[in-house]
Length: 163
Length: 140
Image 1 (cartoon, each protein chain N blue to C red):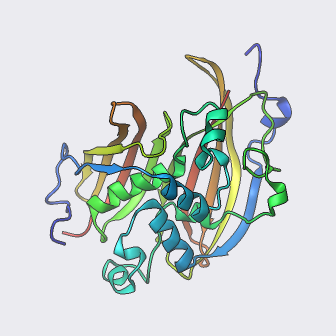
Image 2 (spheres, helix red, strand yellow; image 1 turned 45 degrees about the vertical axis):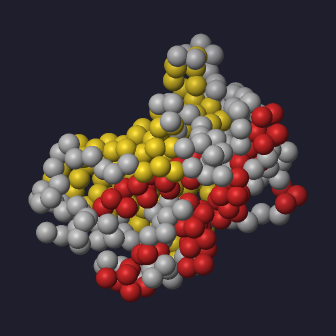
């Protein structure tokens, strides 16, 4: 690769913990706000009896909610002009633009209201590829979600495309 | 579980009922709030244009939650979503309709698990998000 978009010191960070471990309680009110915001009014997210009839201990939560439950609040003086927070964990790359490339999720155990979920995010993968519009970097952040009984409930891989 | 698919009632090639989704400005705002996401491209039209987008941008993870709903609405409350993945190939914008369609591409009758191939596309046919999911269907 003649001109690498990935500095050596960034490549050396593959495997490093980027965020966490952080633990949050799964709260009905917050999960239901999320369900309404995505337009998913499945009664298993709102009605304990329906959730239990479907085999859950109690009210469960939309599958992707746990990512957002784990977002840590920050003061507004950390906001940049684009509205995003300063990201102290960002991986340095010689690129101008980072795009959301997609996600891959595995679900192992149900997540219910009252659970305490601990999430840890690692830099799982960083590599340069050749696309039709020139070279780009594929960056994978892998988050493992563990419940209060130390069961891995889910794993997500968020794929960033930078060029 | 009247109406929901079971291992017995499902076969490879079955198509899921299509689902249409879109988000207006208020709904985009609510998603930003519920996900604590202050990124300006999702509520500030002028700023989204300034960053080169044609309009206010639908959040990628919001489309992800539309996708999981497409699967769980079909599979029913007793089924369990085992995995889902998608690529964000293009952006959806405020008020744009996104249509989800999907097909059963594999069925493991012993485990009760189906594999789905799904696509989310705009009304002009632009593919927004090719996707896959696997689901354990409810009992016999």
